[in-house]
Figure 1 (cartoon, rainbow, N blue to C red):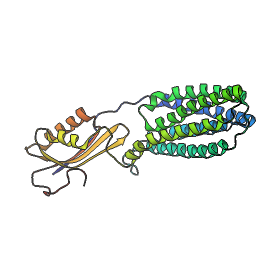
Figure 2: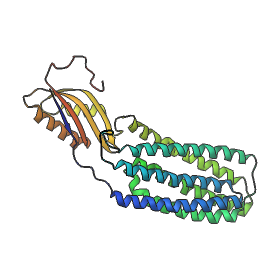
Figure 3: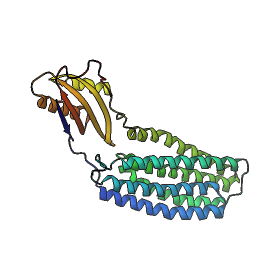
Figure 4: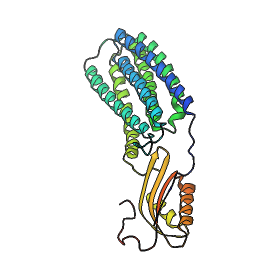
Length: 304
């Protein structure tokens, strides 16, 4: 019996230092905007503006968390964290999604209360500040968009800003309607719409993060398909105790026991590794090679 392990091939990333600079720039503009929005919201009496400011503050905090997680994730593995620190980004993503949910629930509560007791709102202040906010939100989204495609951590922060940009659009619409028609009721309605949109994003993004933290199989990998590919390799008699998970986001991993029916298990092992990489882009493979009859007849094929 032999136990073989392979890290696979290198995994390319966006230049981390350039990414860090973009995240820091996004943090700076969001903090400045938050202060301006809170002052404008208090002066104008707009709950939607204050809601947008609180959400914008959460954007800045989410970016701070994302930035810290990026730094931690690049630390090399050590005796305490033998798989490395890459999952710090997934923890950060979960924290950010949770904070989004809390903020959305608070907005629902406040918006509902204001719906039954509309308050006067200075529409012109709302429109001007929300216009500035929209510009800042779009700049922040542009800074993080590319990184959001490959990182759940940055994607959660990006969604904070995307939701905020749409919130700013809603606040502009509300302020305009207040100016034109004196419709104060629009302010809490927009607040409720922003809250609903945030909750929708949380519902969409959280399961992916939890699945990875729970060592779930990558969403684009079917265990039965992986099993079929492995058992189709020359020299493989059967496969059992198959485990699929992700080392880090976008880095699928496979752990399995392989029963070989030819003399050279090392050669069979390499064939399996190559097949997994070519078909499923597996970067991390751990295989235990076994001779026929070495395992129990009722052994689990997938998992233990």
